[in-house]
Image (tube, rainbow, N blue to C red):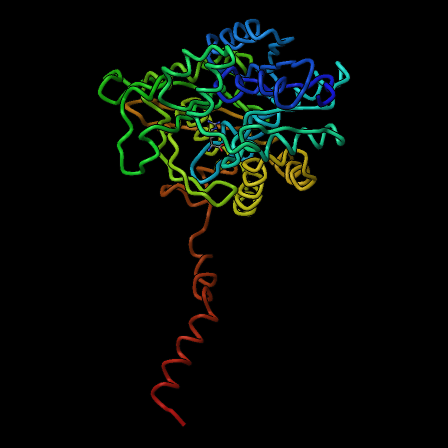
Length: 405
Ligand code: ARG
């Protein structure tokens, strides 16, 4: 008989993949003790509770760790400052994975564990994100990914679970594969894998269909400081509550549904459905404020920085030095992203009604049709010489075509 190994920490959500990992770690991987860690980043309360109940039935040493506040301030707000976006996706799952792995690594250190397991498949992005984080934080980590290593299918997992006393009734009822956190909810699987199959209404839980949204829109005032929202209609709200409240209110108005074709890190194209009500509103408001306070050159250059930051975030390279470098630039722009944005939420749309900031680079006196502070006559020379070289070449091409010598 193979010698029994000591302890393994399983990054555990309570879903089918991670649940079958518990007996597998004991039977196949020969660990004596399985420690399960569920990190609360704002997924449904009942999922967290069910995960804990299953862990109890399967006799693991189980921890539920609340990381919601850190998730919002260190991950969601970071993404907001970078206008975080990958192919139209606010990156909710991507942003949470490094934190989930970090919290698990901290628990492992505390318990003196260096072996890990996770339930990621070999097709997705999460395996990269979680393993990069664990290996960065615990360089000697031994990481098992049974679903990937054993090329498992869902039906194999169900059969294995039934044989090994893993409660799976919840999983059997679930047609869709769902991942949730405060920045968004992703829905995959089933017939959604057919890109021409229209998402059925039942997949949506955070957002109303347009038909069911109120006829009356809602006007809100959001106050920003340092590129992040701090108050709603003049009332200060702490970051986690701010996101929770916005998910609820914007969801009621049908905001934040996304149906995307997404290019995964592997190169696979996949069809993804998301509900990201709060992220959609905050990203729109943030951009409106940036456009008021940043210079034209800052806006142009920051778009490049933002897209590079987003690529790193999508790939889960949370501890990449380039990410830190880019954040230095981003942070230096955000000190001026302060002020108020007025928005209207109505029938699936967020409209910016107004914006103001003490850092506004806008002067009504200069821009207005009714003032003379900006002397239009002085523009004559600048306009006359505009595009000089292009005009010269255009002329050359025309005259040379006429006169081939
Ligand atoms: N495609 C998205 C991403 O890579 C969402 C993945 C959802 N993950 C999941 N395990 N259901 O970030």
